[in-house]
Length: 115
Length: 110
Image (cartoon, rainbow over all chains, first blue to last red; front, top):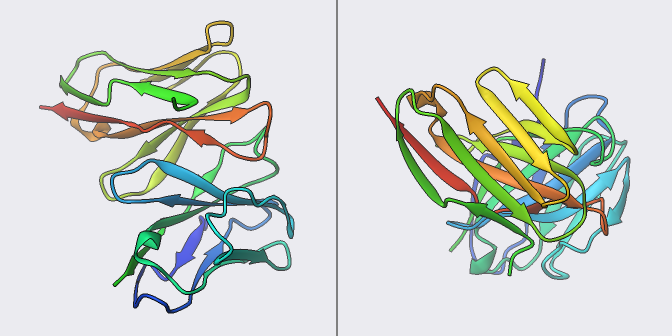
């Protein structure tokens, strides 16, 4: 069956531009997560959605970052006025329900390069 | 100090060897995950456990809640096991977000 998909797979943008990253979770999965992995660094939690609601936005690095989820399905992570330190791989994951009881299924990631 | 620590950071082995990767955490947890990140970057969930032991093929994960420690074992290692193995804890104080270890890079040589 279809897994988690993300688009684009690669994005190169100039400093100061806005970018949108998209995640399509596995159909029927109510929980959706965004993570970031900077070069040579570990994974970092950004935000978690249960349905269309984000109970925890504490991982978003700054107010330039925002995320939304519509229809309990597709999610978009938006970075405004990108900076070079935003360069990273952005990973999306989904699970059937919340994080306490289910393993997470990861997408292939979007590699963002800010020049 | 990170709330989740892994050791070793790097590990090399000969094919067939028994591998152990360790994960220690300093907070109370609801669950602990083991993930595998392939050289191409894709991440696969191997185990989620909150007590005892789980086994899947040649992989075994154990957790000791009292000692705040988990181990991932690979029996009869194979070059295709070469990957980064990541443990991640779901803390009891915030069950919405995983806290990740820095990963263990494993290389298995034929």
